[in-house]
Image (cartoon, rainbow, N blue to C red; front, side, top):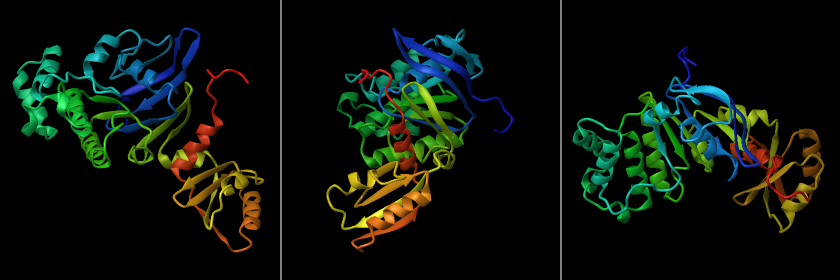
Length: 312
């Protein structure tokens, strides 16, 4: 925090759909220029949270501000000043890139539309494709067009809902380079993602599961909050080894990492003794490693339960 008011500052936001409580007491602060990542399983409330923050959904209760405007009473004003990129491509496939951007500029009532469109095309590297129909674009180019449309009206806050789903690794990397360029220019970004490499590119993270924000902070802070000790098991790993390691005293998480296994637990000495017995014949090797962000999030995920599942 640099002493300025947060771009997002909400407390106790709740949202129900019928009898389903999809967001529970969400409290969140995001500073100017920060990239804040939302992670969590499908159906966890990430999209609903984002839509409440950008004015598309009205919270049932709670309070707070987004861009200095009240999230309950000034949602119309918020919608005009944020850029919101949805999970699915939502522009018009039978229009060209330039026509799509011009249409969006008209919806915002922007003066000097042509200049704004030309600037957006140039900034996102779309100028040479301005006459190409949007429906003929690859996933990565559609993503660029969607981001250009979000930036047309020069918002101070971008809300991106799984923006890189279905695009190739190079397009994802290029997209994140652009996000960091925007952050360096003072634009605040709240982004939901399932990719751990993208999570590591965020300044701070929040893990939301089934409506509840279970952990937040920098990547290092989230990892430390889980208090896990992690060992790597490598070598001649036989089928069924992972299941056997899950049954060891002190073992709380076993996950595959390439050809090795990561075994984590909160009681390090207990876990180490059990693992040492497993590798005593020399066929396997054991070494202590840093707990990764993925380890931490898998641990959070397996510790949360979908409240909409039928009771056993």
